[in-house]
Amino acid sequence: MANSNSNGRKAPVTHKDLTMAYLMAGGGQKGVDAISPLLANHTNVVDVLDKVIQSLTINGQSATELQDLSDEFAAANTPGVKGRKPVTSGQTRNYSVQQIGDDGDVFIRLPLSSLGLSKGERVSATFSADGVQVNRMSKG
Image 1 (spheres, one colour):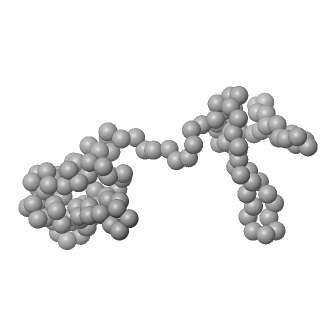
Image 2: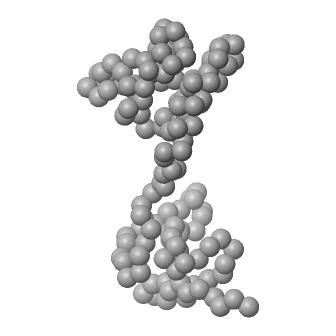
């Protein structure tokens, strides 16, 4: 468990490692105490605990203490947001031009959250030789 791999980085603790540690400690609260230090730097605690719980219940083991631990982690952590921080008004960002397939048109993925838009609202895009201007369309 958590041995160093060939490049010197710490190998991740898997749900199998946690299941073994939980069972070897005798399960219950002793098992939770045994795996808690292993979860300290884990990036997706709730997901890995869910896999451990699923593995134990499939094999007829009780996992109520682990479910309580998973619920505690889930309540304490809000889901993360992928990608960059939202754009603020007046901020400049550089984007890579993308293309799907050899025959597809080129495009950029442009976040519109700074306009205060939500899904389903409409915008107008004005294209010129110098750039693109995106404006919110009036409702109605």
